[in-house]
Length: 362
Image (tube, one colour):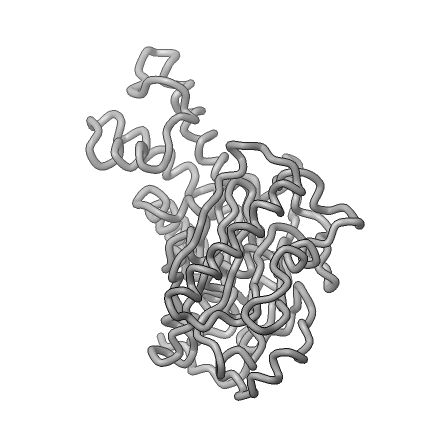
């Protein structure tokens, strides 16, 4: 990104822009939140976090018939850390069971990607970044790597790799690529929000333009994470909690000497309308976020009306889109690329880089 130099005064009058925009400063969003169906329902559900649990549970059911299940307790009780420990340090039967689940999930992931590749906006995708909580750890990495091999063996010329940033941070860092150009002269950080089906994160992203003009060195300076799924709040209570998280993060950052821009980047599940409402796809959030009488952008602005000396501006996009944008600096050697986020559901987005990128090698 090569932001234009605007004055601090411009910040007070610059328009907020359109939420869910397809045309961003350095990239075009070709598609996002695609809902592909087959006879079993949404194709993406075959590669969600729950799908991996289902594969592992199915294998255990078969083994129990002969008394050969090497694990104890409910399958859902095994999280990422427990599965990784079994794979790396468990006895050979436990490790083999986890490996079998990895293989089964990798085949499902490859199948889903092949179905996406039939879509017009995915047909020319050269590289796919895979994010979400599942991608963090050796089990997720192996599943992603194995799916890539299966796709190559089936004739699909596409690279797969985990998103480089930690899942807790990618959905915040990507917001820097939503920021309007005037930010990059007078400020060194922005506030960002990542809303998911299980967690809500609010944090401060430091731009670090002196390290990389393309924002490739942007980093999360601090953030709060709230596991709302454990408390099951209503929608209004969730927004109130989010507002408090944001204000506390901004206050701390300013005390540390950061110049926080009067801007908040927001990632949220679903189809994002230009006015800041959510059309569909937010069913996993607490309460009704898709109501025509609810505007998430306005609700956040009401709780954080000003940052520093200026009125708060907000840009919102789909959460998978923003996770993918965290990879933008590393995607400049390809023309078309995409992201899949493996979590409560399977988020997706595809991108077209704008002119001026270097050619892909090899």
